[in-house]
Length: 297
Image (cartoon, rainbow, N blue to C red; front, side, top):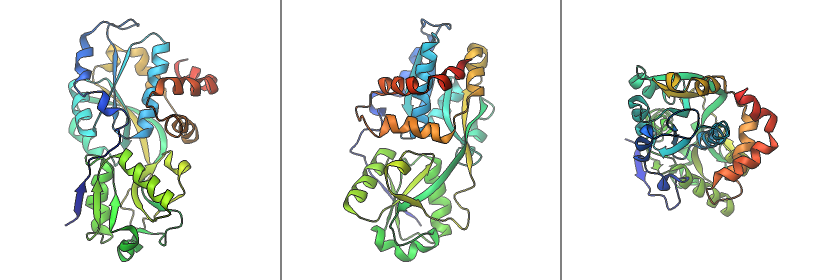
């Protein structure tokens, strides 16, 4: 049986601690200053940087159009439950057809898939570029080179479920410890290993800014247990289209290629570490104004 270790991260969960899950419900009945009579509630997965980037981008875009927007950070499972209940209006980081398929199946009657905005996503198991192995088939025999552990992310994520339920038994990795922590904690471990010239194996995904920041390589997955390439979808509550038809159409038409997403992530996560994303997003928008204007035209 796979050994799992839960680590309480000593780093902030990308602002999650500052925004309680219960904050979303209170705004649903409040009057806003924009075209609608209440704020748009966007839920953001803790630690999923592409979703954080897209959500803060849309917060800025929608506020410029006169809407009020609330962002609430939480883990994956409560976000889908809240979306189905109408506590949230949108989540911009649903991975299909594999990673979040269970949630779409569970709540499919009460949520709406607005389509994919990026179709170049994939789950990965990555190691430092100069690691002595190139394939998951080699990992079990070289476990000691990596301290006998795979550094993971949030335990409720689809990536951790697939890693624990499929990858670990499929490649005979039961003697390794799959560390359950958080994305920021995993990235902190990755930075420490890189700075120290040590080997490390982490659960990761593309697109992610870590591939620009660290010398990494993906381990080959000859059995295909991590799944094929996926798409990142926007998913709404069942009532969103009726309450915010204009925004619903904008989100349904939203497309963002990976290179553009990487550039936004670099601005948000590779420099200023204050967690105040608003001025960083505005700087990025100014450099990409024509593309941003097209999101609402």
